[in-house]
Amino acid sequence: MLRSNLNALLEWKEKPGHKPLILNGIRQVGKTWLMKEFGRTAYKNTAYILLEKSPRLQELFSGDMDVQRILRGLELEIDGKIEPGNTLIIFDEIQECPDAIISLKYFNENAPQYDIIAAGSLLGVSLHKDISFPVGKVEFMNLYPLNFLEFLTAIGEEKQNELIKSHDWKMINIFKEKIILNLKMYFFTGGMPEVVKEFSNNRDYNLARKIQNDILNSYQNDFSKHIPAGDLQKTLLIWDSIPVQLSKENKKFIYKNAHKNATAASYETSLRWLEYCGLVSRIDRISKPALPLKGYANTGAFKLFMCDIGLLSAISGLNARTIIEGDAMFTEFKGALTEQFVCQELKHFKNSVTAYWTNESATAEIDFVLQMEGEIIPIEVKSSINLKAKSLSVYREKFKPKTEVRTSLANYNKQNNLYDIPLYAISELERIFHE
Image (cartoon, rainbow, N blue to C red; front, side, top):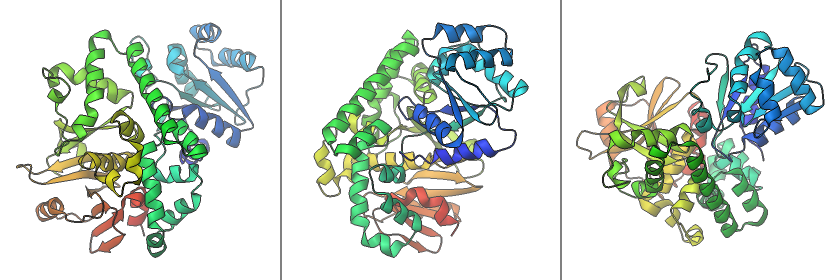
């Protein structure tokens, strides 16, 4: 399964003075596979260290932080040599050994020649109040569910991936119905690696849904394991309310939709748990599209999206028949799945910030406002091929943006500074701008 993060990991490896890398991502998003595949393809050897349920390794890291002593212990653990430049050291489930997290600082300071990648549940890491996190001594990389182009390659449709990346819009238009059919599949399956792998093998929607439900259950078990009892029930209420929140015309998150007595003051901590472990994306409303975007955010008004469109489909109870019933998939829940899809695709852009905008009377709304490369870009999401864009007109009149984007199932078009980009090509937005 080809992941674009492999290229980013190669860039990290080749960068002079790189620090130990922490790979962030929700459970079952493919962190272990990615680390091992990177070790297999970019190094002579891999020292894979699973820190979960290993008293021996716990004891190894609990002593002094003599890096050479730790390395000798790791060589004994793997029964092999660890050579600088030739061996990738992987610390998996690092949250189970807080002292291993601390050791990353000493590897960076005293043995920077060793390449180290660590991954684990940040939700678990957050509970270790007594550890000194190695701030400034590590680098971070985010791993998200497969985006649509990665999904195409994973299901054997690499030619469609290449076609979209070619920006040959005339050819794309000829084959767009085939692409849209796969986009519908992606709306149902999402990008969790195990779901995509099994779906690629047998095209069984029922099996895909079963795996998704298993993943959702594992997340709830994780809540019980890590989240303090006082916050657990509130966290579950917020989590379960997300489909209801997104099904409304105004998708702004309302605490009372989670529980009739819920308030921001009493539920904010529980919401932060979901954010911290990467299971939700919080998109704040801005009062003005200006740099920096975060400086104009109203943190009391926001939308809440899930980590994966397939998991949203599952938790919403969407039937697989929706896949073959025209374009119903794109208008289901008042376009909630379409907005979820765009949000998910935008998260793959590096060094970007995403928000949304409404006017004071709330009669006009821009679904997403993207800060990227020093520019602020309004993005209006349309279901099906409907290109009426009243809100974008209001925004245009008020702020005179340099670049505007409208994304839908309509064909690609550029008129003045307005880009019509098909939903299935929204991940190419940055490259389209540079043409």
